[in-house]
Image: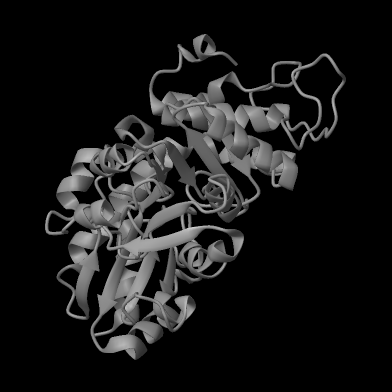
Length: 378
């Protein structure tokens, strides 16, 4: 599709729900078709699926339009998307990353990236001065930002971080998994590439493993990322792309409900006698609220964390006692999840050991509060 084809689709809700008029079956069906072909007749838009395919292109077009980008690529997982992006910087590149971020990504940066020729150092989340001083002139090729950051939901000023990175000749990459393009559009704030673990909110049904990258500029670097995806064979499968497109069609309405439920719970848990602290950028008392209000629109997302009075044991027992919240990892599905993060992340985790991460789903908010109340005890 060309840019002109997208003009009737103005609002994110319409872009997502209409799926940009994705390929439909003959006979007038209103649901995009699943095309499982891996090879195509020459002379058509696609040749071999590892490089591109019709269903893949449909889902990528929706994401690209939602983010306001110049191109999108889908991968077999969020980690595949993130690691391909960083490896495309080339050996010897220095990357500046936040101390607080998705734990498996941090683990990869610390343990695997150096063995693959990348140099990595870390800065304190939200600290713009730390980003500025952490950049190595001539060597730093990218600054990585995750906002809101898992699992304490710290908020980094994207526009300010982009200015710092660009002044040093570096790119800014933003993991916007938990905000989604419904609530935040990092490319319009100056980011060069936005990354999503599409497994989470973009799909929204906990049944697809996928990752996405959307670029502001279709430059030579972006071409290298695309070539690496083709060469390493990490393209998202046709069935998974079709399921992802299905999930994207309800993204706007889901994010509204996730945000409403999470804010309602955060406000009430702030006064709970068994909760010492609530971490949620939608609360006016949250340290990241002002920046979040500036760069997020329509809500603050469905992710929050609480610290439980009584320490790690009390947190662990609370997670086990929930009946509506599933004690499970991951996030972004219609169902609510709770997880005691510290033990999951290992002994070098910076996460407080009494912290419970909540992925607030689409259930009735009062039912969710009642479940947490009985699990926390009195």
